[in-house]
Every structure is written in C-alpha cells, then in structure tokens.
Image (cartoon, rainbow, N blue to C red; front, top):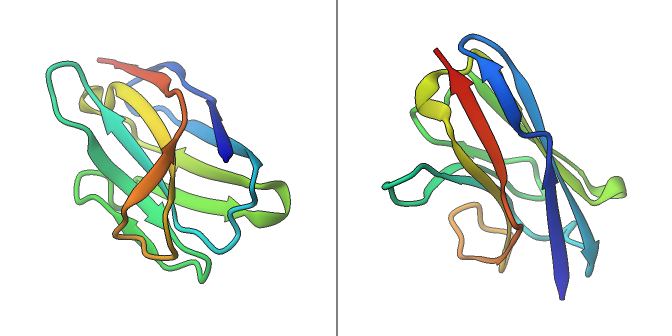
Length: 120
C-alpha cells in the first residue's frame, strides 16, 4: 500500500507561480508512472501531467509550456511546478500513482488533494 501526501497549494495572484509536492510512503514507486490531476467545482477530474520512470511526460494542452512535472525517486517525491497561473487553474490538485509505467494510466493510488486558488 502506498500513501501519497500533497503539499504546496495556496492562494496566488494570476501570473504567479506555485510548486506542488507529493511525497510517497509505503511501497516505492520508482518503476511506476506518476501523475497530477485537478478537479474544479462542478467539473470532471482532469489529468494535468504525468511522468514515467524514463522521464517521458504528458501535459494537458491547457498547461503546456506553463507547468512542469518532475520526480525524485531517491526522495519518493513528485513535483508540479506551475508558472503563469491563470484563474482557470483554480482547482483541487491530486497526485496519483500509476498501476504501471504507462503515463496513460490507469492510476490506482491517490492523495487527499491540495487546493490551488488563483485570483484575477
């Protein structure tokens, strides 16, 4: 069993930056894909970014060139650097561990989420 704990969310003005972190405990995840998802009120959960063990990445079109996903297997941590934030990025952000190395998914373990609010 793996536990995922996100941190780094908060309130930021449009154009600002935040860095989310997700620390994993329990089983290691070095061979698994890791992802960041978000869910805004009244909207479906959206896959934002994903990364596998070979550092192959996926980004949603809405965040390309603004967000960067990275991982540190030695620290069992995955990061999401978010730059040029927009009000539409406001959501609860979740990190997730994939069932395999595929950045497509499925993702089987989830954190509790961290709120990101971007003011205009």
